[in-house]
Image 1 (cartoon, rainbow, N blue to C red):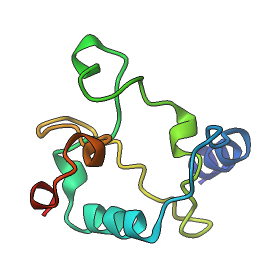
Image 2 (cartoon, rainbow, N blue to C red):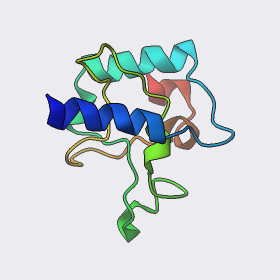
Image 3 (cartoon, one colour):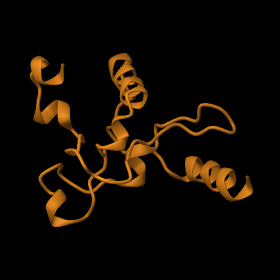
Length: 106
């Protein structure tokens, strides 16, 4: 417990949201819940690594501050960061900007 929870609580204290970032809208929160419920994180990542092949996915690599607005579900349960463990499907970072069509999103 100490090895997992105390570092996570410390990270919440030291990581601040990026200047100019916004709180998630209700629609974005619902989208995250669907992403978690459907198990999308098993095939799709939401992080940009600092490697050449990831430059097509976003303007810069993901950093801890990108996830600073994530809040714990409870003291013992953290929220999903949705970064994934492998990329077997396309990366979905900024997908709404890259594929804004409602048909594609559906």
